[in-house]
Amino acid sequence: GAVVSQHPSWVICKSGTSVKIECRSLDFQATTMFWYRQFPKQSLMLMATSNEGSKATYEQGVEKDKFLINHASLTLSTLTVTSAHPEDSSFYICSARVRAQGLGANVLTFGAGSRLTVL
Amino acid sequence: SQQGEEDPQALSIQEGENATMNCSYKTSINNLQWYRQNSGRGLVHLILIRSNEREKHSGRLRVTLDTSKKSSSLLITASRAADTASYFCAMTTSGSARQLTFGSGTQLTVLP
Image (cartoon, each protein chain N blue to C red):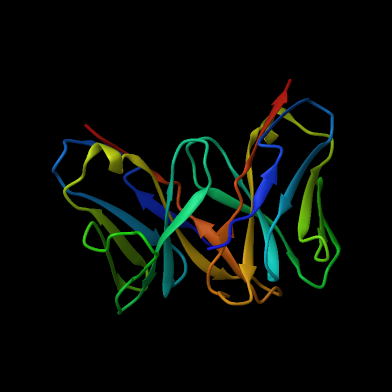
């Protein structure tokens, strides 16, 4: 089945540094990937839609200069949290749409998530 | 963007019992999906039900959809300790067919 690999699974950094999170589709091409943010015991909030070869589409309230998204190939999207601060500490999850056989609908395959802690 | 509401927020049951989670949403949908998330992990797709379907089964899972009430339920029968996880409904709406909007989630704990 479709597999999305996300790396790193956890990262601790100092305030002011930048952190890059990678999301790779391992056995399929993903023209579109989605980045979510999840706070403890809460739901997933869509941050942005990453489109291969073009600019990402950000959700309202998400700073594009703060959360840089690059989707340079059909199998890799990256999220860079720039000048991270403690309030950026969260669980970040990427996903890619997989065309489900016989369903014709967008079923998402998720990465395992990245836990970011900013000190 | 629309978000579904799920209840209960948390559910604790004994192994072997059935677990029922409910999801309500606000606008018309194309389909509704259920996902499972183990603690600190990504989500795994469980089942999808289309707007023109009323019930669907997959193993120990049974999903219902009532579009007139804008609600769906997920039933897990004969629960196991390994079913302990958070469960989220997710909706694809008519106006944003390329995005999924997630519900608030139900934390299920199955006690051995």
